[in-house]
Image 1 (cartoon, helix red, strand yellow):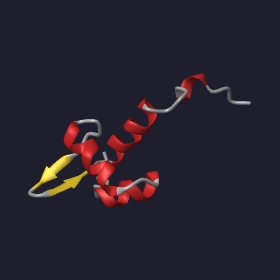
Image 2: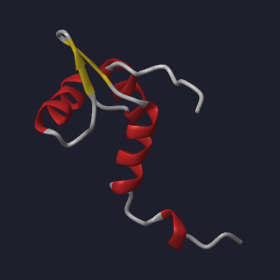
Image 3: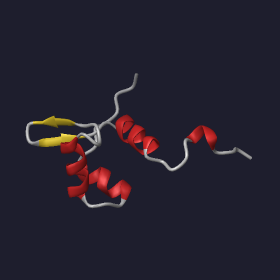
Image 4: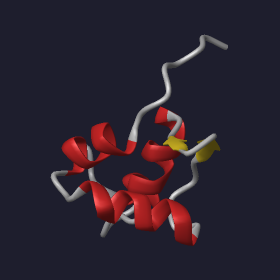
Length: 66
């Protein structure tokens, strides 16, 4: 398994086009999986992808591929 660079809350916020405080609140409340290293949060790219898939309005397998 190739190592992937962990993301900061600021990077996640930029990708999702939301405020960084929202990402930090999601992490603190357990809504988004992350790791707290000292005082800093980090998010694995796979955890962000899982979060996004879980909260999509349609599961990926139900979208027709025409």
